[in-house]
Image 1: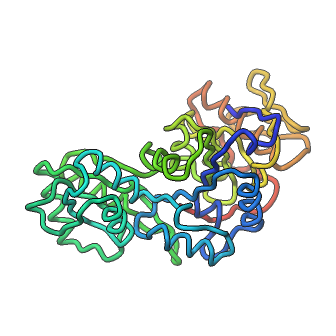
Image 2 (image 1 turned 135 degrees about the horizontal axis):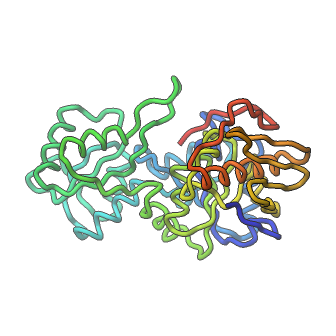
Image 3 (image 1 turned 90 degrees about the vertical axis):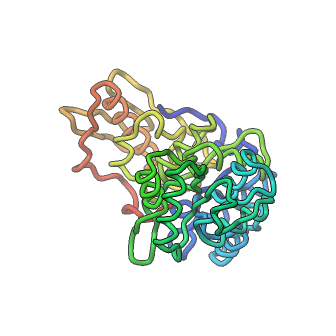
Length: 339
């Protein structure tokens, strides 16, 4: 269940890790107020990190995009799943190892910077690494799939099944991972969220002993925070809405919920629970006959907190997801960010 913070949430942490799409920007524009809020985090002396599963871009390219939408960033602030994959390969095979590359520039640069040697010659490779790359060829996928089937170790930058594009959600790198592993009959070692390597890489590179993850997606950002036992703040400027929250199992539940990033700078009260009922700030929520009912008045943030808590109480007690189809949350309409 949600936790309480009597002081502003950010005060308990020395590293704030931000997801990108749906948290910092949506498409080609920064989310309103985000740049100023990230500046406030930095001004307080805390470390700031931008964490992305996208392995196709280098940290410098990601930092340039952030700067282009008005968010101050340097390449050292950005940590990618490609960098986490490269560290896994160095730890397993040592610097100088030759790695068969199936991906784009971001993965290649990460391998080289880690002291590895990318190659397209499978005869000398000790492992294969894959990451999203729009120009990856089918014949290369077939070759890698056969090599993995025959025993070549396989590290995947991430397993995201979708990727945002100007024309909507499209198949992500996870579809490629499933193709290779399904054919080969093995499991890939995955570096990106929600697995530990990318989260641990972020702490190692950027610094801090008390991190918090800020994300918009339950099955990458929030689950990734759970993987390293770090608190998380879910913001509602991206892909997660009431339907996703209602269905969230314990591993997918955030520590805190806020409609916007302003929640970092506010105390958070936890709903009071009485049986199946949750109460906070003038709102009361309960699942009755399988349907979520929220009554009262108060802040938008407290509405979300009681609604989520009531849904989770119902899910834990019955194993059934509450029907929220006729429940209209307060505030702006749903946004469409994605990671």
